[in-house]
Amino acid sequence: MTEICYPKSAALLSVEQAQQHIRQAIKPIEQHESIGLTEALDRILQQSIHTPIDIPPQRNAAMDGYAFASDALIKNQATMLQVIGTSWAGKPFTGSAQPNQCIRIFTGAVVPDFADSVIAQEQITRQADQITLPENTKPFKNIRAAGSDVKQHERLIKAPKKLKASDLGLLAAAGIDKVQVTRRLKIGFFSTGDELTAIGQALQPGQIYDSNRYLLDSLLKQANHLVTDLGVIKDDSQLIEHTISSAAGKFDVLISTGGASVGDADFIKQTLEKCGQVNFWKLAIKPGKPLAFGKIDDCLFFGLPGNPVAVLVTFEKFVKPALQQLSGLYPTQALQLLARCETPLRKSPGRQEYQRGILRQISPGEFSVQAAGQQDSHQLKVTSLANCFIVLNSECKGVEAGEMVIVEPLDTSL
Ligand SMILES: Nc1nc2c(c(=O)[nH]1)N[C@H]1C(S)=C(S)[C@@H](COP(=O)(O)OP(=O)(O)OC[C@H]3O[C@@H](n4cnc5c(N)ncnc54)[C@H](O)[C@@H]3O)O[C@H]1N2
Ligand code: MOO
Image (cartoon, rainbow, N blue to C red; front, side):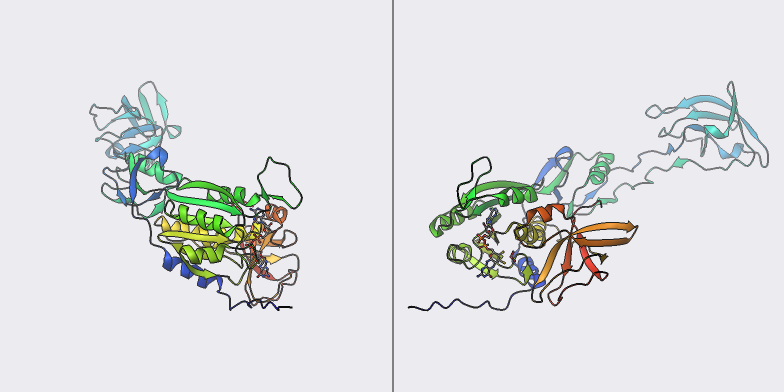
């Protein structure tokens, strides 16, 4: 009988080492395009923007009331003024006024040059065209100066930045209708596995539904990504090689799931080696150990493990920051909080674990967490229940109930 000797695992790269390898391998995309504001949400701004005008462009009222010159105020006495006109928002008052005159004014309306103060209507009494300002009325109130938000030529937004709703509001306030953004990242992804069946079809013995493709598709859905689903590829080294080599030239990033480990039907790592280069394979992370990362020419390749929870974790920790960097952003770190762990957590030393947890806010700034359920890497229901990762470093040998742990929220509202 021939004895088979399986190679033992070499030392595993840490999460931080792997992230560093990825950062070093990435050259941000330099091509950009000009797009309209309505298309720009979540796109990556490539060129800093300065405002061509003051915002607000003119001095205007912060309250509905009356605009007057403070010289008219009589110390320790009520002041009577005559109302001689109105400044509406969008229809300024164009006349002039004597010192004892004022105008009716509305929030946002231009304050005419003669006036330096606005009083809210609730504070005065009015009879016909006469108003009475109470004694000790304060001057210079309720006027927003031109440029009090942003001065002309000041920088509005520094690139690179992923544009959010308030950025677009700010750009619109400056009258800017177009922005220079990084072109969309072209991302292709596929599943590997003979056992995979598309949803909508009946399962045959030994088959499972291909959940990874839906998970990955959802993780990738973003305004900045042009995503192509390349389907399911059988566990056949030639088919996998053909898929990778023919797709690499068309995408900035290729992502596969499954076939990343050491089984006889796992071909991802060796195919990547054949078609391009493997930067690393196998990490001290759980789940996600057999992640393979490399390049085929300029195309980044992520061979994610097949287990669905490993797909989620490796996407969050490695693919997401890589996509940010590729599109010109600085990769963001996950927000980490300290929470009291309500349940004991089992863990063996050796790999950094991202256990799935349920995080609760007890009071502002005070959190508790519990395991969302069992922690096997095929368990999607527990992952669906979870709203955070509980991060346990590789030396950790388990957690007692009541200990403080680091958590990374997956949802922004608890
Ligand atoms: N002898 C060893 N075996 C395994 C090791 C190891 O170090 N030595 N590592 C384990 C770890 S950790 C993981 S994770 C898995 C990853 O293996 P692969 O990337 O090769 O993935 P597969 O074997 O193809 O599949 C694993 C698991 O996931 C299911 N799967 C695959 N694709 C999908 C999909 N698209 N949708 C839903 N589920 C999918 C598949 O049926 C398997 O159950 O290897 C361990 N083994
Ligand atoms: O580390 Mo694997 O990714 O057990 O699931």
